[in-house]
Length: 110
Length: 119
Image 1 (cartoon, helix red, strand yellow):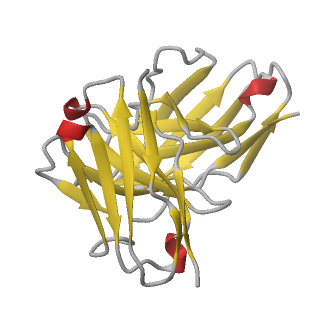
Image 2 (image 1 turned 45 degrees about the vertical axis):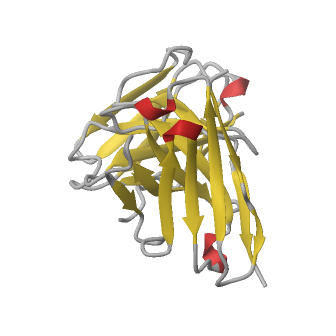
């Protein structure tokens, strides 16, 4: 399976909103509502922030939101805070008990 | 405390073997599917393998198929990854991750264990 496509970097000032895209195909992102997003701080394990395209686990701020249109999913971070800096990864279920990840996006808070 | 703790990483020569372990605690291990995910140094995440609660069904990424074997011991709350015929490109931090029943995301991750394949 080919990796999902994410922009390598994104940035915004505190208080602004930033959106990270995640483009797949009709066999993964477009086929299933099982896109999830993970935040990873340097040297740490990833942490789930969005699952099933739009749902947030308990404890994740509502500043994080997800959406999907066709073969592209998106993560929006509203009201940017310094603590939001890190790497963000999308993943999609791709059928037959397989998953595909995006290449990751480094978010910088200016 | 709900957690996953990996172990077994280290330095191994190309062509060698290694077995990773993942100890689960704080939840009913047998209620969950499990997966291994890896991250090469400075690179992104790559899904490696998955198995169901009773290990009836397993799946693998094409990059490791035929070389890696995932299995579990529910009595010992442990997940394993047997890695054979290791290659330099298998060098990565290996994470075990929990998959909720009948769902398709990773809701709990361990801290990872580093595998380095080098002569």
